[in-house]
Image (cartoon, rainbow, N blue to C red; front, side, top):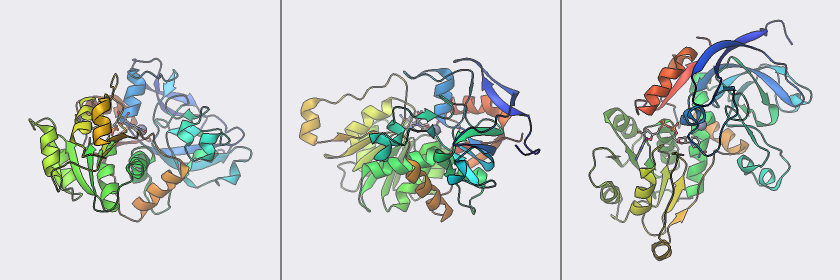
Length: 353
Ligand code: 8ID
Ligand code: ZN
């Protein structure tokens, strides 16, 4: 490895599930076969990182853990065979998937997040809350050279996830999409990708700051889930013919949003579950599900191509991440703000401080 690569670097390490995060020095590893070493400059903080740390999902992360899966930096060392994918100095992004087998039916069909051998940054592998990270070269996403690394980082999970979810909804331009959690990290990008695809948007979230943000994307209506007494009626009323939106991308981290979405969708409407509140179920009455022919199509991050496309659209200036930069050491405060719903858009960590 080059002499400029330090032997140790700063990382945010959680020793155990439910524990705290400490900023410590960890050894910088050498990339193995098919791997690259990336000097990370920025990492977004996704609500998933908080779920992983708290341990409130039925799936549990491996500890001790360096969380994070929205990393942006440059390639500084190549393992054997990795030059097939990247060169030293290339700007790259680390997303949720660290690797997949690239050989099973799911990988072949482009549904690699469902690969049974998939490994995930900040969950089964150390992630992006550190200054240097090892990753599998095949899944690292090239970042367009015109896109600043801080503005690119949140696209690696929040961006690609909602970009894919909107594809799954499969709407035509002019149709209406409800976005629940519209002022959060995923949601504010969903508003923009949906608008860029020619969709009308009904944004659902709470508070003046998130309303202002959503309004700036040209949404047709903003429905405040905390202030509105009859949210279902309000969302239906905001749709053009009063029958409800054609689809709903639920990117909220609260369970109630799911029950409401199934109610406000119009007949044949499509619910795209994205947000992952713990202990949440989707209950559908069989009779009414057939009578109204509503569909549920869950969406899990996106594949390598989705990641490239979503960055490309941002590089063309059609989508802009709304973010504030904080230091790596401020991560515990960021989680606290996230739990209290105080973050409009995303927080990006500057890994140098
Ligand atoms: O691949 C996936 N499916 C995937 C990928 C990435 C993230 C899923 N996620 C999951 C996360 O694990 C998390 O559960 O999506 C959820 C949202 O992640 P996020 O955007 O990073 O979280 P956030 O920035 O905290 O935004 C959540 C928003 O939801 C609103 C909040 O006000 C916040 O703005 N919200 C809540 I909590 N309850 C709501 C409700 N009932 C609601 N908005 C509307 N209705
Ligand atoms: Zn994420």
